[in-house]
Image 1 (cartoon, helix red, strand yellow):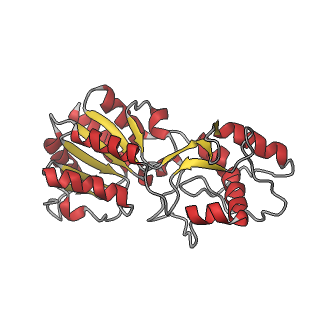
Image 2: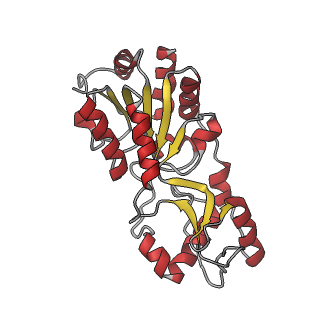
Length: 279
């Protein structure tokens, strides 16, 4: 189903374009689309191994874990927020403007699709741009929380060169003496507006993703290994409808056997090429 093994990349891209031409295309993107913007993927070459990812249970119950999370997040925030959209993001925004792409469902929290100009973006795992108070529900801009952290911890120095994780985290040398930010309205516990390990994707976001997929008659998965359940569920819905499924990812994915075409290449190469062929 995925094409001939010895077929060259250009031919496979052309084959994918033939399947997609004249169709309304939904996108499902993962961390692999942002690697060329300097944000690493969770898996594959260059990924940072994480033996103890932050879970929602640890975050809520362990003060030391919360402190570690906020130190690491603050050290990486400026570099994470300074990342620029790449050719893959730009291609999707252009195809949406041309009426080829219906919208983007992204597992990323970096906001790069919106910065590239895509207007219909469903951030199923949330965004690092916002911080929520878990007590009173107040919503804060992450930049304001960064200012609060710097005022409460004037000794903290953000290095110029950091090794980011996909969520903007940096491994800190120490968390001693760090004062965790709190809600300025009620002094409640703050949490970035992202889905932690152990949390479910909010129902309204997943329903919006399903709605976008139903309004489309083809699906491209770009830069996701489809390890996370929410992505697999969406691909399963596309498979049940027998609509064209194109997978663009450097490494194999769980859904490769279902794909009409798999493209083992970078999204910054494949998506602009598809844009040119479909325009």
